[in-house]
Length: 318
Image (cartoon, rainbow, N blue to C red):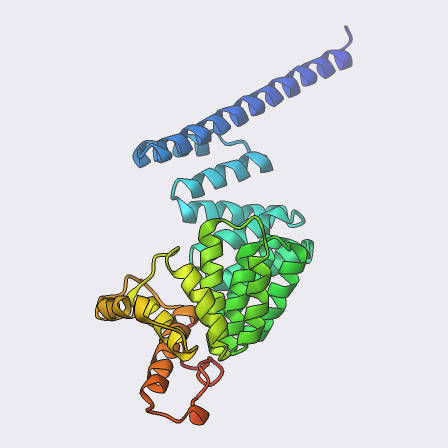
């Protein structure tokens, strides 16, 4: 055998051995990631952490394995490590739309909203119909109180993903934030027309539709939807008061709920934070109580929407 064929043979053997080593390391890394996720789900975070550290040591430098590793880190609670891994991948694979999309989701969930917005925009430049990136973009706009822009993005999202109920519910909330309850009603009626809704989602959407109707002074419709949904959700004392007010202003009998509303009125609410919906409910209860007591003239009542206090209401929390 001549020198050149001999060297070529040695090179092929070396390349084959290197490919085999890379494959083995990739398989070892994937296996360790799966074991780490299993340990985390079994309540053994320390063991999961050790397995992930070994996976990092085994990690070959190919894209898919690094994505798998970063997702495993995220699932095991190592959020910043996962984010750092994805930042490097976005930098080194700048044309792959999956990377900024996933990083945008991670950053949003980690509370790093400004960078999440930047990554969502980058993902949308690569894939304008990315539902994940559109959702992050719409949420960041709402959080910054850029409500008109948020509505436009949510509409764009619902056209790209018409069955994404989460997006429609959030769009209805932004409409309420802007003081457009009738538009919220339209969106929520569309949600309730979806035959695939879970019982919990249906009750939530129907309750919100009742509040939107009440904000538009459509008290009979409000009472019907609030009453239909209240026993299907974890209702608070304020919720029962809201139903009492709606039925009263609709001219309906309240004997069946009056005692319940009074009983729960002084109880501490179980709600952990506020939203456009809880703020709207509370304002409607106050307003309805004043009307019921004759404290204000019907024609002088301020509408219970958010358009007159957009600067002082708390931002959306998601």
